[in-house]
Amino acid sequence: MTNQNVVAADVKSRIGMAIAVAMSNSCMLSRQAVPELAALGGFLSMSQKKLLKRIENGGGRGSGAKVSAWIDSMRSSSPTRVKSTASIPETHEKDSWILHHPSALNQFEKITQESKGKQIVMFLDYDGTLSPIVADPDRAFMTKKMRAAVKDVARHYPTAIVSGRSRSKVYKFVRLAELYYAGSHGMDIKGPTKILNYNEVGNQGVLFQAANEFLPVIDEVYKVLLKKTKSVPGAKVENNKFCLSVHFRCVDEKCWAALAEQVRLVLNEYPKLRLTQGRKVLEIRPTIKWDKGKALEYLLESLGYANSSDVFPIYIGDDRTDEDAFKVLKNSGQGIGILVSKVQKETSASYTLQDPSEVEQFLRRLVEWKGL
Image (cartoon, rainbow, N blue to C red):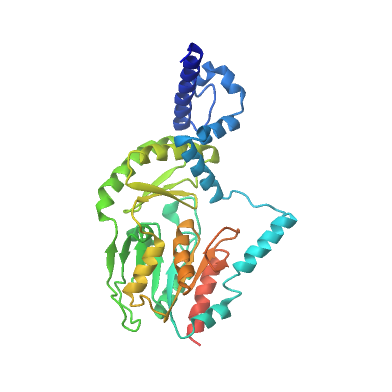
């Protein structure tokens, strides 16, 4: 290797070290924050934006490419602005999307017609479906009206809450003993403690935990992430028992790269864990083949509807993690998936609802229809 190459390699190494320090300490790249970068003045002629892009891309290889992919995913699942006007192609595309994913309220009669003669089973996500998405995940309370609607639905149909939250935490939000609760993306399932008669089918007291052996490593990684993410303002790590959530809803977008890099560095040490993406949240889960779709299938089997043509599952959710359940329903040709979203996005759901208020309307109409 020539002296010139040695110098270049040394400079590149020093830049990488300086960038890592900048990302972990300030989320901003400046001469004041990182003296090492100031000493490499020629490289600071580019704008901070371009330099951040270079960090994200990492030259298109290795860890940098992985972080770049995460950043793209974080942006695509977390739109920060809505365009006030739409071009003709955008309008045409939206019309086409609405045509293939119509409102579940507008198509209510069609949905109930499809379900006639079958047992409806309700599956409901929590955050963004029953409650609004809020800055503080510990304050994601649903309204009294929503709680009453869910309670009424559960009087007529077997009903499950399927959430990325820990089962105990989502139960504290909902506080309805007659429901099934599938926490940690379905890895922790418990049946009703207040037994209702749904034609006396299945095991009402089911308790299933898919990843008990991962509990020690989940707790360990939780403690590590608490320390590592302190340098990123607004980041919040939530322990959901069988999985972890790194919330970035309150993190400035310019700090997302720093947060993703910290998470990547931690996960590199724990190959038995994997990362998935949700709405303004990075989810860390065990590397097992279990998700909300598997939880849906397990609950239907527990209710006595495995491979049955007499059941009509309805799954309502707003997140990427709910797509696993939507796909199960789509592939089975039974029941429907309903996406809660105000923006068009790729989905396997058949219908849409705009927000939790429309979810409440849909649930109330199901109760009224049952009473006719």
